[in-house]
Image 1 (tube, rainbow, N blue to C red):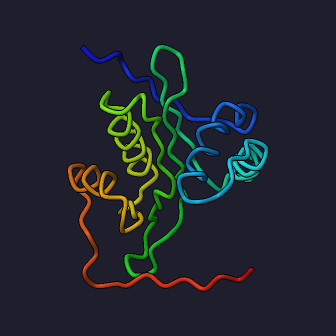
Image 2 (tube, rainbow, N blue to C red):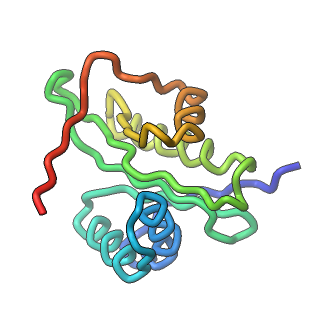
Length: 151
């Protein structure tokens, strides 16, 4: 039997709880591990009500994090949320942590009137792709994502 996953919303005051997980998430995508940068970034987003950060705990220990950016869809003329960051410790995988985080993200987005949750992942992140497809996400066949670095 898997331990029960508890998911809660972080505030700016407890951004330090999510910082180690967010630092690991950034490290996964090639950035240096830096809890200070991670904590400042989370605190700034939360202070400015620019994002929603959820933390998952197993036996009281933080093991997963998801960050969402509420926004809008011009095409739908309605709120649209961006699921930007999802990270689960290797040791907590297989316990339903990502599924619990995604379910709460969807619940919050729906309650805010969002008509969609949008996300991207690396082409090589096949583990995440399988999770997203199991959760009902589908690859966009119409749009291509471009980016232009500004730094």
